[in-house]
Image 1: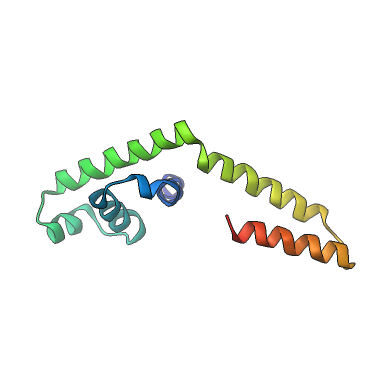
Image 2: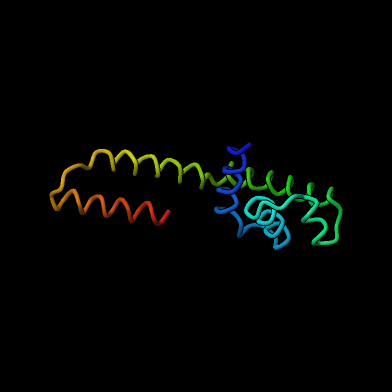
Length: 110
């Protein structure tokens, strides 16, 4: 379950601008703020089933976007390469320090 939640959170980060406002709000409340379906339904005066359906449809949309655009997959690949490079860059000379700083910049901008 935690793995699914983590994946959905990443997909949401990458594709949230492609969602409607309502989809963004429900996903943020459910996945990021950890509200229950019932709590969201009560706040927006809709049924729990309506929130559930919206969240599930949005999850499917996020997966569809990922299947087409692969932004999360490419991000994971880049992060793996950065980690491998970090392991290769050793030493305290100026060149190694500069390379580690550049790798940190890459990591921070992902």
